[in-house]
Length: 196
Image (cartoon, helix red, strand yellow):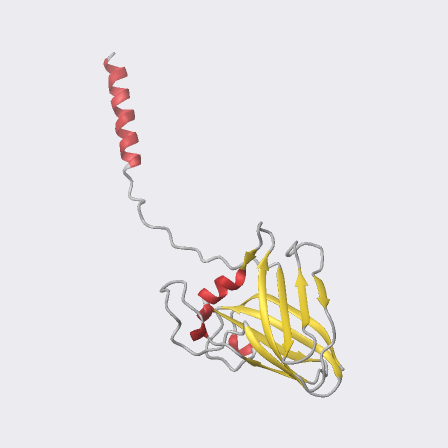
């Protein structure tokens, strides 16, 4: 009987010792990158037809290539107001990823690369101070570009490409190139375009 009491007390003491271990340290917060399945770039001229560029990839790194759609051709000698919208369509309803990018504007930047002989140029039309910090609830104080809003200006008729890339934690300020900015790519897509 004494042995049973002794073993019972030893078992209880052991449980108390284990439950009182010092593992109360707060775990480090993990800031996971955004899941982005769909990129829509809307190009709206002051007069004329809006052109929409869409890339949709519901299986991410899966075997299927993204579905790419360009709704029409661009007009020559025209300035388009551009807007990039990102969604995570693996959730229902689809998550608006722009909200997270706006709230973390200092940690994100879109980059635009015109190539393949396309007679066009791009310029940023927004900056960090246009958005509200998710951490503090106040506007960012810096004027580094973000690129959710931009302009695309065409000149002569041509064909070529427009690559749109979102970088997470790029160097800011940077010279507007992916090489100088560094960081990690959240999403990138190249669209084939025609200027008529």
